[in-house]
Each structure stands twice: as structure tokens, then as C-alpha cells.
Image 1 (cartoon, rainbow, N blue to C red):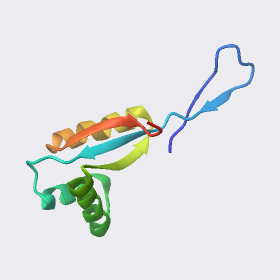
Image 2: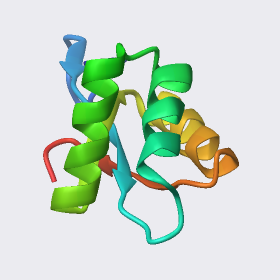
Image 3: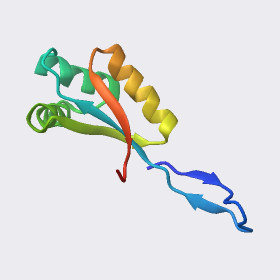
Length: 95
């Protein structure tokens, strides 16, 4: 998970603050399961078995967390999923 360093107001010591975000892909009635698996393989570089497992999680549980890191990184992933026609959002990991 990524971290972002910032100075807290009034603090004399640099504090490392974790601000993890995740990319969530949601189930939709449009895309074929084989297509979703292929997107996960192509974009996230997942091996076929893991991509299929994530696709099943999306299909059966309605969502799957595909990546975590800084907000900026997750925004890029969400936009990429949208470009593939998938429904994706970003959330705080601790939410």
C-alpha cells in the first residue's frame, strides 16, 4: 500500500500518514464474464486463474477490489476500467 508523507500542523516531527485507496470493480448486466477476465489479465497483469477468481467475485458478490495505493493511482485505474466499459469506483481502503 502506498503512503503519503506530510507535515501535520503544529507537529515538529514529520509524520507518515497512510492514505490507502482501492479500485473497486462492480458487477454489471452488460459485460460478459470472459471479457471481464480478459480486462483483468490485460490491464492488471493478473494470471488467468486469479483474473477468473476476481471476475467470479465481481459476479457473485457484486464487487471486487483490484488494486490499492495512492488516490492518484487509483483514479488512473478507475478511468482505465471505464475505458474498457466496466463500472469501477475508488474508495478509502479503511472505509
